[in-house]
Image 1: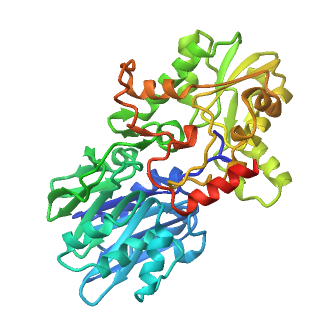
Image 2: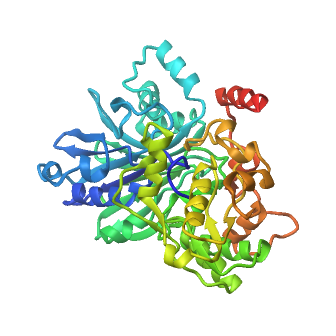
Image 3: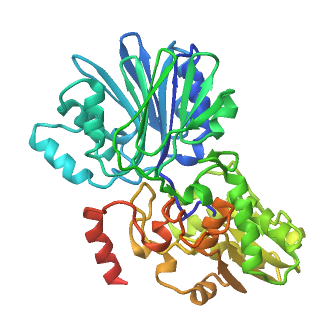
Length: 476
């Protein structure tokens, strides 16, 4: 799906420990995760006895310049790329967050959203807590400082107070931690670099860039402690389950990443194959909307026997159009970033594969681009179910009025985007593609993924979001 008016995942996290080139490795790691957040970037690293942070608004290459990172030498660093969904875009919310206390140093980078943040923050403020940001990510630091006992005890007690989705990379003095929420909604994995260096990352695509070898995923509810070349693992909660966000496979993650032992490209390609079996249509060529839909388009073409062609060209050197202030400028931004390959699409019946439809305006503009370039027919096929429900786990869709499939049925939506036909992949088929096996009678895999945005089956309590959700639903 094209990024204007589309989905945006909150962020990506990265950590490296016990490597003399830690800052440069962190830079390359974050650069590999740039697709997860383009609003801000930052690195916190150990500089002598203290933690130092370099962060700011903008892309990784703009914030973490070679001139800046060449000034320091460190062996441990954590990093963050951000797209703001909770807390806003103020500079105070740019991560990582770093704190120096009289008895310890703490820093963290967070991917996800804490559902009960408002209640926790109120309680902490009543006991004297003073927050330096409006981000829910800062909560863990405050909880750690209010708990008693050794660090492990404080960390377990603090994590059990948080409800929602989170993948943390945490620095504590000479230690680095990787932490995943008990429901496993957001991804995090471990890799090894050289003999004693370990890496943590939201996605495995970062490992090939830095030459690290994937070790394993951090499990739901697991705390991984890395110190002096050794890993210690424990769980902060006994009630853990795997509920990875389905949109990690559909849209968020890079195709060269592997999550939960499933390659993203393979999963998307299989979705395209299933879509071709279930939603066939006569056409001359299959095209995909760059970039996240290409894998599904290849799968659809292979299964249907209809040739795959490059019918849409993406200009990767144009600024992000979704921040433009007016619809007119956004429209020009779409045309600057995406153009139809007229020589390919003219006089053709086209199957256009996209990964999802959120607000509908992007799909409408792309169909228009293709028809203006001479396409005879444009049949839209979506390699995921219709998104009908808001997400409260770190994605920027929090109201029903942002989701066109919650307001229009498939026929009405087809008319809105002015396509010749429109079909979505069924939710069961998406899960089948990920499991690559037929369902058994007991549906034992049913709770393996979070599918809340498709069917409203939320993994956790919604807290204050529930009131907003019901109000928005009543207004439809």
